Amino acid sequence: MEHEIFMLNRIEFLLHLADNALIIGHRNSEWCAHGPALEQDIAISNIALDYIGQARNFYQHAAFLINELPHESSVFSIPATEDTLAYLRDASAFKNHLMTELPNGDWAFTTLRIFFFSSYQYFLYQQLIQHEDAQIAAIAEKSLKEVTYHLRWSSDWVIRLGDGTTESYQRMNTAINALWPYTQELFQENNFLQPTKNILAQIQTDWNEKIKNIFEEAGLHLPEKSVQYQGGTKGFHTEHLPIILTEMQLLQRVYPNCEW
Amino acid sequence: MQNQQDVFFQDKVDKEIRIEPKDWMPEKYRQTLIRQISQHAHSEIIGMLPEGNWITRAPSLRRKAILLAKVQDEAGHGLYLYSAAETLGISRDEMYHQLHTGKAKYSSIFNYPTLSWADMGVIGWLVDGAAIMNQVPLCRSSYGPYARAMVRVCKEESFHQRQGFDILYTLGKGSEAQRKMAQDAINRWWWPSIMMFGPKDDESPNSIQSMKWKIKRFSNDELRQKFIDVCAEQVKVLGFTLPDKDLKWNEARKHYDFGTINWDEFWQVIQGNGPCNKERLDARKKAWADGEWVRDAATAYATKKTAKNKAA
Image (cartoon, rainbow over all chains, first blue to last red; front, side, top):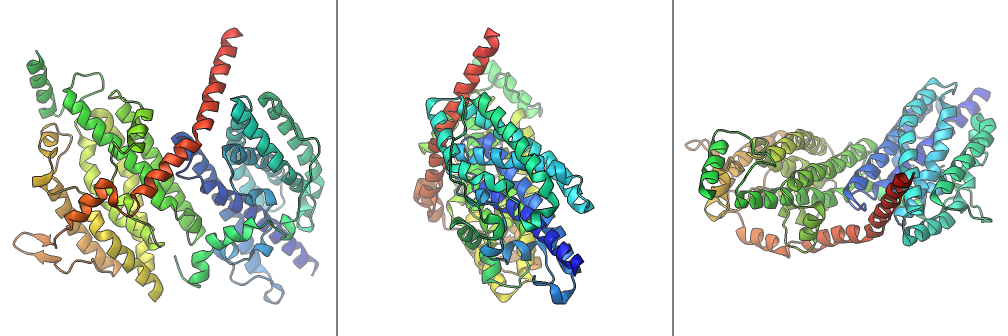
């Protein structure tokens, strides 16, 4: 029984990592063919593709663990696959951070979100490399290479827009005010985050330091006080997630049990 | 003098010696290439829209990743082709301007809507298939930068074509609804696809000169026939049919005979009256306009940084 709870927590943790990657990947993929310059269109599509890849790796491992559970205790439909997990769960079962599901807004909002989120992933994955589950460690190691690029690319944009024109500076500030209320949720503890409990505080310290440094270079400031939203990891989402899922899950829902 | 240069130029072309950016070339050769390469680049960029449309709705994560990578490849093709055109003395911004103002054309095929997932399969199989048929000979185009860009483009296109075929093959083995979805997509895309080879040879004004300059190697009708012959066989493997009651093997010609193409529709779409002409162009113009402040900021930042580095 204890082992089962342990495994269920691990599965939830994997789904949380996968959902984060899938949903932010979905948002970034919406830019494909609509970017501000051809080179940036390619860059953001590439980032979206990395995220979809991370989601697939985490879902596949989650599916493997789900299929190993004793049948009577499984709350998941079996056999689970990466696609049943991505396409057949409702919004309330998704455990992504709220930040990832917000609409793209403009280029400032989009690049700032990638900056905030990839900074978080950058420090998180460095910890997960040492995870006792060798598969999680391996996925983290592979993903860290990608996230390192996402972080560099998005830092460059935060600096460029912060220190660009008056308009870009203003837009970056608007984006900071809109996104900041969703940043602290990244460091919220949660049952299934237990394996990372002790490390979240360290990640938060590293994250704060990173944000501070880049903002300084960009001539940007952190908001002094702001409301903080949370709930994503518990399945309480914004109105945007069900809309994303309606679109994403369309074919699987309309034509159930098909091969594609 | 001019005449001698012309003779020398044609001699090089005849000997299959590649023309490079710094070589002398007739002005009309340069203009023809700018028109053709930029038109091709625009087609890649506009072509991202009908497929990009289905990335968020792809029915499995694997298909989603493949489609996203494919549309990203198209952006890459646009990039090499714009760069190849730039070697002829036109800037990318100027080419965009020509696209946005309707002066430059792009492949009419992208003015048709993508209405179902099966369209992703058909675009890969037929549209990319037709593009490959057109483009493989361009790898031997007389103009070096264009020929080299096309080598890479063709490699990636052949992946896309196989991926499209695979989507249709899977749908063909699927449920009744999936088979219906696929047949419907084939029915909608078949005729526009065979129109991709351009007007009939006797109505293609630029062809003769382009063949002489070895920008073009085969005529529109030759390529179209070759494409139809290939597809008529492949469609059997897929288990679907092509929507042409006159499609029949002709033993004497050793080719498939096919029905009459609706050239009126072809010219209508070229003139801007296709189902999605306005939407496609508006989407590109919007992306460009929305991105202006971003590009301005990047330029302003780069200028500041250069100044700072100089001062240091």
